[in-house]
Image (tube, rainbow, N blue to C red):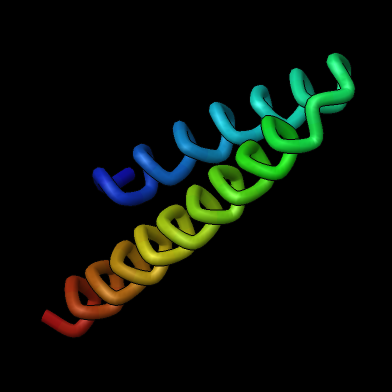
Length: 62
């Protein structure tokens, strides 16, 4: 697991927590911020996954 995968997963978790807290307290702003943070985490995690796949592909070629 590379750093982008790890940080992405952490952002996903923090965003999900904020989203659920916003939903529980009926705070639409917090819920929206959590959704955004979760999506940013998804993208960073996906980027890390792509880097890992590229690295694995290059390692197999050599």
